[in-house]
Image (cartoon, rainbow, N blue to C red):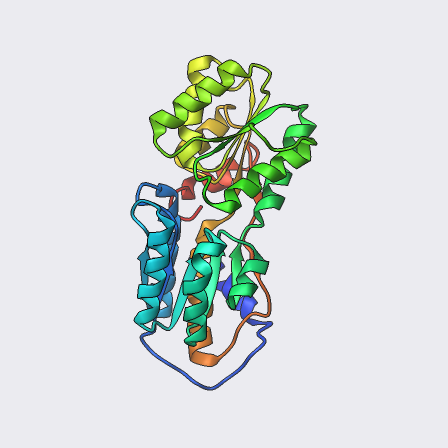
Length: 313
């Protein structure tokens, strides 16, 4: 796995746009995410920056707002910038909230790479070197096309992080692929598992024509699956989700979840560390953004990826 990903990084540098002779050692980078401590999905990215840090012989610190508060995240960006690291890796959870601190870091001469949330256009407006992530609307649209092909016409999108604009784009893409406007089909579920389960159960009870469910990650997928099981709908209603976990993998094998959308978070953590290290040492930089996804995980390919769930996938 490590050799394969190192090859990916090497390929990226094959079309480097800048060259230089400066070299540094013991570089320090900071990755700042919007995720609360309770979001286990980010363990893959934490593992990725550890692997990349060890390979590159650099220090990488992971920081996040414990409760997911974006104002707190903005302060963390400011604090990280004040320490003058060799680079900052940051999610664009909310462009309006984060643009000031991120632009300030760029203006100080700190190289910034954006990952995960946000768009390539937003990344460019911030002055970042590039964006490594998944086009969220396109991913949602691809999921919707699969649902439409299966005959789905009515759906519910369970949004556990509705304050993140990228999450809304996932639901909007899904709706557009089905040819309907996004409205009350998107529910603000919150992140408490019991609350998510109760809200999904209530929606399904009052909208019995629903024939497709989309969740945006394990935080909403796990309790939604429990709600479907309790109602006898697991395996009877089309169910797609973003991201992967061992529980989601088991549900795919059992036919309870039709597909998971894999944005390959390992690459979102690993590649920016490798790229920033080479940029700091040699001045080399890939010439464009990097799409880490989407890919679709189904019964047909789950065996290839499930053993890495929660660590590399």
